[in-house]
Image 1 (cartoon, protein in one colour):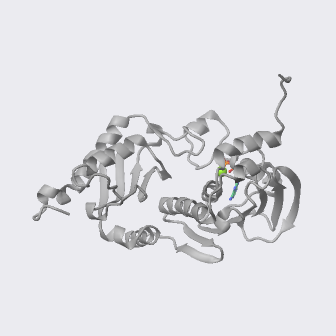
Image 2 (cartoon, protein in one colour):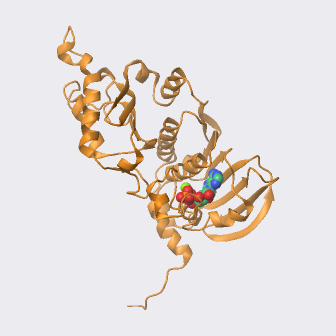
Image 3 (cartoon, helix red, strand yellow):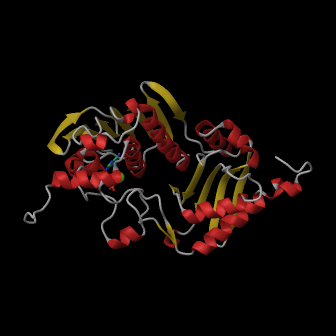
Length: 343
Ligand code: ADP
Ligand code: MG
């Protein structure tokens, strides 16, 4: 065996990138979350060749100070938390300070930013982490654009795991849908190979929210769903659940948000499944867009790097609340309540 030595920062970042960056969709998620954390009101996402060739995410958020530009690409560099107390009450989507370092270690990345109080914009680039730390002046309105080219250009073994352009784009679009469903107050656009796929204006009124859901999922979903608005024991649930007549052959139209973050949680899935048990045929899956809000202290989001899992302090309570709310909402469409007994 060789002697022990420290990994070079570049290799350490490439290894860490394995956790965060598997495909273009993960990059979009990280960059859009950064834009949201920066207070952006408009986020434009552009992709070429499924995002493998190019991803460009432009926002009108607060921007990054010139002196912080190079640092933002370093590992464990974040402006979002400082202490353990901050971590426990984390309100931002990011906090690990890992995304830009990981992404720049496996792509050619250019970051251009105009900090809100500065008179001009600045740019920094990195290629596979051989960071050219020189910062040069650039033209850009207040906000940030991150351009990422040639995913895995320097890690061919990882590149082999990428699927077709079409498949990668559909994963990417899926992440954009989740993000756009999580923030109705923000405008989003998505373009692929010069074609506009989504163009969503801010949606403040309930009717505009329904329009956004219809545009992202399907107009039929809104027409065949029950609106949910319930509250009990410090828990609140809002959104839409599809009627059994709108069931799917796959669980591909299921969006569940906890305090604004999309989650995939076994307990949640189980509660919803139970609620639909006697109204759905075996093998059919419900469609839903649901928002659960609760005291942030009662849920731990710091479970996994991609943050899709959560841990509820009182899982039983959450399960019962979800089950009861949805069971009741679906009550009217239960087979024994329907005059002709089937759907
Ligand atoms: P994290 O989001 O976990 O802090 P990142 O690596 O994603 O880590 O980003 C590092 C830092 O760069 C952020 O903490 C933030 O200060 C800054 N940053 C990144 N993207 C943006 C953006 N679009 N607008 C403003 N600041 C940004
Ligand atoms: Mg981040």
